[in-house]
Image (cartoon, rainbow, N blue to C red):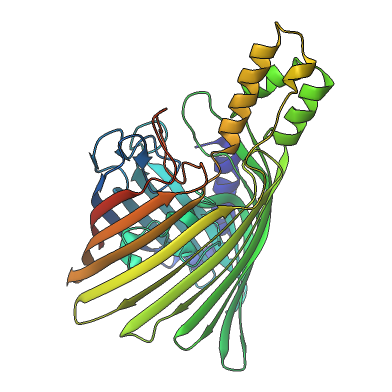
Length: 412
C-alpha cells in the first residue's frame, strides 16, 4: 500500500486506540468479518471489441473471446472493528480483474470513524466515493437487482474510492430522513505498465433524502486530474511550435479540472421498484463532456424479480478537432502532422456514446444468494466505440452487440 495512504491510517488507528484509555483495557474489541462475491459469465456477439463492465478491465467478452468470466466476477472480504460507541474501523479488500490482467487483491476501503454525536460522524482513510445510488455497495452484486449497474452512467467514474476525510450528518426535516456528506481526498489508481493517472483535490458533497419507500440522492464532485495517456502524441504536437503547443494545452490531461454532478431516485415499496439516475460530466481535456442516464423497473413475485432497463450516454463536447493545418506546412512535415491529427481524433472519438436496452430476471434461490440472467442490446453511436474496449480496425460504430450475462451473487 502506498506510503501516502499507510501512514495517515496507521496514525489514525493509534490515535483511536490511545483514545480508549484505561476503560478500553477492560473491554474486548468487537470484530466482525463478512464478505461478498460474484461468479459470472458473459457472452457477446461483437467480434471486433470487448464488452466489459468498466474501462479498468484488461479484457472482456468479444474479440478476446466470445465468452468471458472476467467481466463481473469478483470476491470481497470486509473486516469491521468496533472499539467502543465512538471509535470504529473498517477494512475491505476486493479481488477482480484489473488493467494489469491479474486478480491481485486491492484495498477498497480502509478507514477509521469517530462518532462525534449520534448524528455526526467523521472518517479518515480510504472511503467510497459517494456518487450514484449504489455508491455504498457498488461492488456488492447481491445488493442490486441487475447483473451490473448500467455502464453508461457508472462508467463516468470507474474509480470507486478516494483517500482522504469526510464528515456525515444525519438529520430530519418533516417526514424526511436526510444524510449529508462532505468529503475531500485524492486518488492514484494502479494502472497497467507505465500508464499513470491521479486525481488531486477531490472535493464534493452528497445528499440523500428518504421519504418512506422513496430515496433520492444528489452528488457533486470536482477534482484536478492528470495522466500520461497520449503523452507521446502531445509531445509530437509540441514539436510543431506554437500551433501544436496550443493543441496540447487544449487537450492534454495535465492538471485539468473534472466536474461530475448526478441525481438519482429509487422508489421501492416492496413488491416492485423503479430507479432512475442522470449525470453530467464536464472536463477540460480530451475526454470531453457527457450526459448520461438510465431508468429501470422491476416486479417482485415470490423469489423472482424480472426487470428492464434503458440507458444512454451522449457527448456534449467536441468529438473531433481539425488539428494542425496541413496546407501551411512544408511537404516533408505534412505526413507526421496528419498522423498526429489522426491520433488526436482517435482519442476524442473514445468519448462514449451508446444506447443499451436490457431485460433480466433475478432469482433469490436461497438466503444471501441470488442467480441472475440478463440480456443487453448494446449500440455504440455516432462513430464512438461506446463503453467497449480493445476495438480492432474492423470495429464499426452503430452496430448492435448482443450480450448475455449470467451471475451468481452471494454475501456472507
